[in-house]
Length: 247
Image (cartoon, rainbow, N blue to C red; front, side):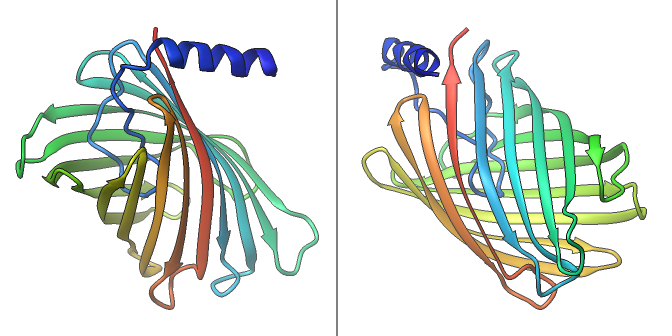
């Protein structure tokens, strides 16, 4: 383990003048940025959701890992792994699911100033083991945009559609995130996002958090959020670590 950490730090120091990395965590708004060509970026974290007010699920704990590879200057390949453990209210047995989400992100065009960068993303669901009945495919298409309003203020927003194969439900997702950079190496964000299910109704959320760049390509993050209406989960939080390595 010490050898691995030393290797990552050595590569990081050798590339200390590389651009600061942009991650797709900890907020729910995916960036329009592409991982640099022939670079690998791993974004991992632990997430906790209090779902006790909505169903027979008390809470959900998950370990999320997103592997991003810059194939070209405008295209990245993505593979997300999720290990989710749901604690049930009236059942001593937990529900455990392991899910893979292969996908891509393609930057449609590069903006400037008030004109945003825009990217399109696509993915599908590939259950490895699933206690909740999740099946294959469940495709997602997402449009991501971001731009700088001021030197220290940025804005990002997403629109997405999901198709749930379990009950043939369609989910719409939308988000707006404001980023503030006034502290060295630290980014702050405040975000509003929502999900709209055809059968379950609308769920609205607010969350906020920070990122901290230890060095240019190693980043820590944390966030905390709350549901805004009766359909939404009560509270959720998470912490994470992201690392980018050169080719």
